[in-house]
Amino acid sequence: MITLKEVKNKKELKTFVTFPFQLYKNSKYWVPPIISDEMATLSSDKNPAFLHADAQFFLAYKNDKIVGRVAAILNWAEIKTQGVKKMRFGWFDTIDDISVTKALLDKVSEIGKTNNLEFVEGPVGFSNLDKNGALTFGFDHIGTMATWYNHPYYITHFEELGYLPEKEYIESKFPFNTIPVERFKRVNEIITKRFKLKPSQFTKTKQVVPHIDSMFDLFNKSYAKLPTFVPVTDEQRDYFKQKFINFINPEYIKFVFDENDNMVAFAIVLPSFSHALQEVNGKLFPFGFLKLLKAKKHSKTVLFYLIGVEPHYHNKGVTAIIFNEFYKTLKKQNIETCIRLPELVDNLASQQIWKDFDCEIIKRRKTFKKKLK
Image (tube, rainbow, N blue to C red):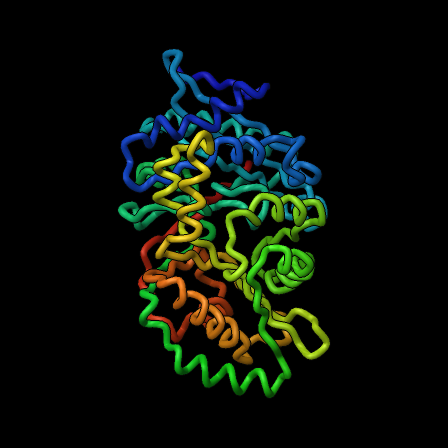
């Protein structure tokens, strides 16, 4: 018999956060989160997502042993402002027992029905900047700090319970030495002169900070047409600044400005922390932060995290400026491998950006949807 228990306090929340450490303890590919960061993400007094969302966290027990978890999320900005009657579920993990999956997802559906919602979808987070999607291909590739990992049987469970694929994302990689640098140099020269544009040059974090708000403005504008996009609020901007700024090398943030110093494009690249996070195993102290700092400085793999372009400049070659700048920066760091983090397969504008790269798809992930009757 499966019993569900709602998380009610900090001790139980830590149990919720650390369950995957048991489930994936023998996996070479699962990348553990930092426990304190994950606790903050799921705490209503720390994550500003809770200003516009509600969440309940449930643990599943079988014979007094934890066998699964799920977060049931109501994003009120999405539901009330956009009119998308969606019940979200995320932070989903389970043993290979479909009765556990059914119990967890039935609870999510129950909450959705109580709130008169039309469908349930997951795994997703609070917003577009959270992790989303269950891995459907590429289980033998190491995960990243920006994605969830899962066992293949998750997909079988979803399908057997009547959940249908909704959105699909791809992740890909390419060797640094295959970047078509000569093409980008040539286009960069043409575009900067034609549109009077100029790239940024940052070496210190304090140089980046004054431009972060403009970057989020552009993020909201450039991603607005994606399905059920939920804009990043002012409070979330401040939260993400604090959460990610220490993980990013200032040289790995590129902005493009017009002649009036208006931002028209941005891109963020992260060093890969995957192996370091596996060594740290969720703990920053006493020595975990030193291993992460080493990875930040010396990782030979980078993750292309976000790219945004002012809609007026779409299809005008502005990304050539960004890639030209990244080439110079990454070459100095002796980067060997570049990874594109999840992108919607039907985001044609994004696919166009990468058409000149020799990209190999290494992972696919999907969200799954079911109508609430």
